[in-house]
Length: 129
Length: 129
DNA sequence: ATGGGGGTTCCCGCAACTGGAAGGTCAAGA
DNA sequence: TCTTGACCTTCCAGTTGCGGGAACCCCCAT
Image (cartoon, rainbow over all chains, first blue to last red; front, top):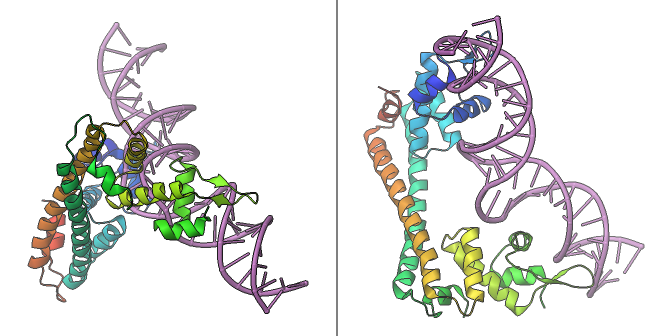
């Protein structure tokens, strides 16, 4: 059994985050006599799993689904794949958006001489007409 | 002078958003006898400016800075460029993060056969060890 | 008069935490 | 033994940029 500080170190998550995950039911540590949370090895695996899933950009709700599938020995890999594919296309969308912004903004920044004069193509583009 | 609905159409922003922008001091329409907001042509320009800046991903605080520079006839284009460049590198960072996620997740999705069997490389990768 | 389509304020909620206050607990050193 | 400091606890507020909805007012057409 580990304290929250210990498991925070091992899982690579802030203690605050772990408390939050408990609050929303992603992990359910036991409690010691003193009221302190007591985390098992299993809790550690769960939290490390969550940390990785979050690092891949999965939402908390996706994470909830993923740990449930992880827990379920009889899951179909197709269910996991579906979640991952949906997230993947979400990521692709975001990248496309950002790239489009980046392109427009990149041109504008290039066109701006960036000196003391007030004349600025960036503002000109943002302004209508 | 235009009502909020009218200007919302013209600026391409929801009325809710415009009220919010007023609340945080990005725009300051007059008020009619009846308490209704009355927007001038100038307000419309401002809101259209804001809509474009937001579409390029600038934060509200950046927008505040940008409209202030826009208002300031004596601005230096360097000041505008600085803001835009900072945002640009922020965008680049995000794109890099997303691409890295996309790559990892893409491999995992490819490796997952996605059938009825429980064996799944995605879960395997998320799990520690 | 009444109905519908404006407008107004106010407050809650979202995601996923983070920071801070106020207080309980525990191990170690003087 | 006392105290100090590092832990732990709960709870509350704030973050970003709005959106939803309640409760209410206003104006125009029928």
